[in-house]
Image (tube, rainbow, N blue to C red; front, side, top):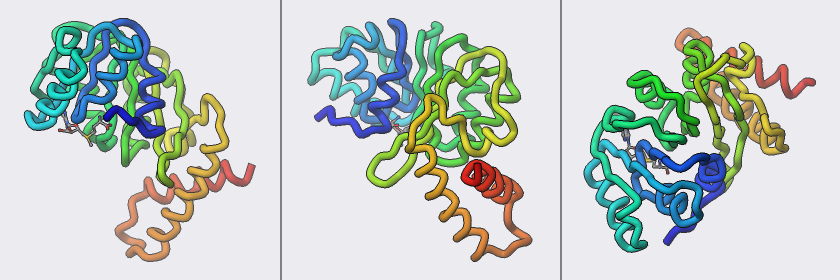
Amino acid sequence: MLGLGNRLRAVLNEVRGKRLADIGCDHGKVAALALLQGEADFVSAVDISPNSLDKAKKLAKKLNLLHKMEFLPGDGLTPLNYEPDSVVIAGMGGNEIVKILSQKRLNSRFILVAHQDVFVLRKYLQQNGYAALKDYAVEEKGKFYDIIVARAGESNYSDGEIYVGKNYPQSSVFIKKLKARKRHLERILNSADKEKLSSDIVKEWEEINNVLQD
Ligand SMILES: C[S@@+](CC[C@H](N)C(=O)[O-])C[C@H]1O[C@@H](n2cnc3c(N)ncnc32)[C@H](O)[C@@H]1O
């Protein structure tokens, strides 16, 4: 019932403090496990979809965790009426996560996993005074995910890192991810109408090559 893959296990490992908000909680597994494992004492489960929130509520009921949770329907950070110690925003695109981060300035520890357009998220963090405390890759069933832990502070991405990540803490998954991503980008570069290619794709491909050549 509560099996987590590498992606959500990494997310859970990054939770700190007593109060956690899981934005876009969907199934509610992160919330439930954070409480069961003592990573948090209280969780605000937020989702824009009433069906998703229901799933999270049902799971919490089954596990007798309702008294340690609140279930907030709504958009991103807007339903929160306090500052959580940790905030998880995972399983959305980079543009959606940026939209959510811009709703409210919180001094929380953000655990962010964008399933696409990660560079958009990194650019936002860089330009809006967030320090990336960690940025590393995990692999799950042949797919790669970037786990970004950020907090309000001095921005610390280099131009190249915006596209490839930091590999901090270091792991061999990073190079594996870059090689897979390079193959994917080359398929796009070789098949697409060159006029329509976004400069970000070309830049990402160049930055990956810079790292792989080192
Ligand atoms: C793909 S699921 C990810 C679930 C879980 N966070 C994970 O990473 O496995 C995305 C969830 O985010 C919710 N969602 C999307 N945009 C949202 C927003 N702006 N505010 C709150 N929830 C949102 C969706 O309804 C859905 O339940």
